[in-house]
Every structure is written in C-alpha cells, then in structure tokens.
Amino acid sequence: MWASFTFVGTRRCSKPSCSQRAVATLTYVYADSTAVLGPLATFPEPHCYDLCDVHSSRLTAPRGWDIVRLSPDPDALKPNVDDIEAIANAVREVGRIERPASTVEVNRRGHLRVLRDADFDEDNSASQP
Image (cartoon, rainbow, N blue to C red):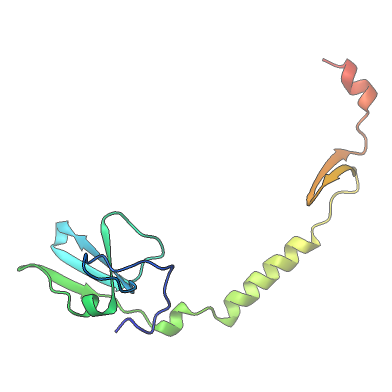
C-alpha cells in the first residue's frame, strides 16, 4: 500500500518487535475517537507512531473508533516543472543583486565581505561621540 512512497530518513517501525523501515505515520485524534494513518511524516513527532507497510495495512482501531486512511496521489508529491522553474528564477534573481555604488569592499574572508559606505570618513568618526 505505502511501498510506492519515498522514505523520509531511515526511521523504523514503532512496533517493538519490528525492524522494518517506516512508511506511514499513525496519529490519534482523541477528541474525535479517530485514528489517522497517512504517509510518513517529514519529522518524527512524540505523539505519533511510525509504521512499516505490513503494520500499517493490518491496523485496526479500538472499538467505537474510526480509521481515516490518507493516501495522497504519488504524482502530487513529486516536484513539477513549475516548482523547479520557481527555484531557478529565485537563484537567478539573487545572482542579479548588485551592491550599491556608494559602498566599498574593505575586507574579505572566504565568502564574507566587509562593506563600508564610500562617504564614510574614519578620521572624523573616531572623534565623534
């Protein structure tokens, strides 16, 4: 069922006797008496349970509870052309930023630069309070 999804990290199934990779995350909504089973969460949460494919497919809820199984479209999770183009445009835009003509580079260490206003006068700034 969840085998087609990519793994997020190397988290293991929360079942004590299982060492399989987790592929789904189980969350309980106590106020609604609902167990929600969805794709593996990006980050582990303290009150959620990561389950392998076998345990997620065998999941049963306590009597009187509902199970909501969320299975998003795998194609919707893949980056599309618009996402990649937006990232490329953002990188190009950052590359176009030029420092103002009124600044002067006074020092550089690796990728860091120290800039100073071209009109800055060191002699007069030391005597001012």
